[in-house]
Amino acid sequence: MPTIPIIYFLIPYALVMVVFIFFSIFNVYHLMRYGIYNFNLYILSVIYVGGTLFIIGASYIVLSDFDWSVPLSLGTYITPDQDLFQPVL
Image 1 (spheres, helix red, strand yellow):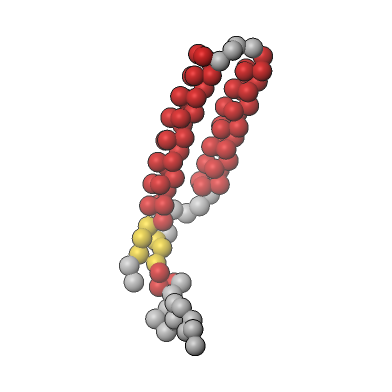
Image 2 (cartoon, rainbow, N blue to C red; image 1 turned 60 degrees about the horizontal axis):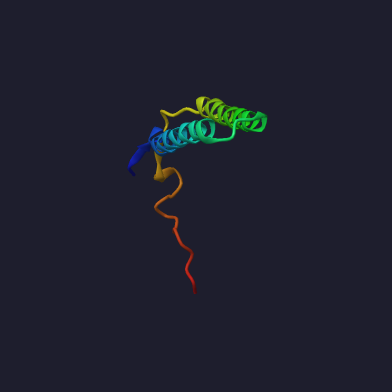
């Protein structure tokens, strides 16, 4: 059975994070540049940036404990004598 390194699953995650960070910078810039500057805008921006940093930090902590060098093999989950689908009749 072919094996796939599990680290390949980080590629879509990294792409999503890059797009998210790009849009976050874009949104915070436009909030500061074109928003009505008052205390509420400041609080909203601090909560948004703080929440983003919290989520990125939490995902780093969770993902750093995982062993990414382990290959994923379908043979460990599907054996040749096992049917993928149960017969209808």
